[in-house]
Image 1 (cartoon, rainbow, N blue to C red):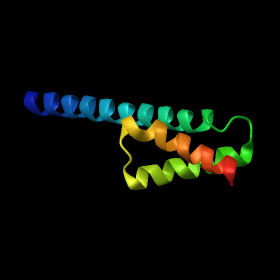
Image 2 (cartoon, rainbow, N blue to C red):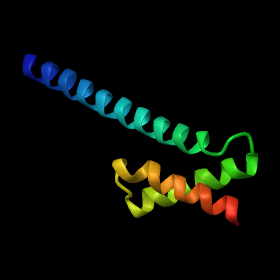
Image 3 (tube, rainbow, N blue to C red):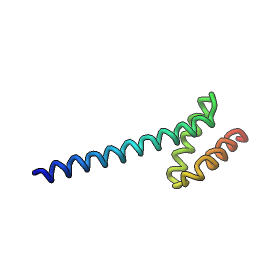
Image 4 (cartoon, one colour):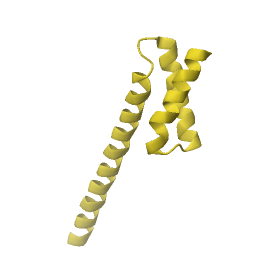
Length: 78
């Protein structure tokens, strides 16, 4: 029974750490996309769509800022 309690506590802690890491990662990526949109609500919606597209394309974390900058520039031109 002691091992079961230890296992449950350990697995719960690991799950919580994974969950909070995933949330923080999602929040930082969202804030990055919204910071490039400025105060324009239509551009904010566009940048959030592009962020979802980047996730689907599995854009690497190191390339995400450049990818979103290019998307922001395309919105200005379009």
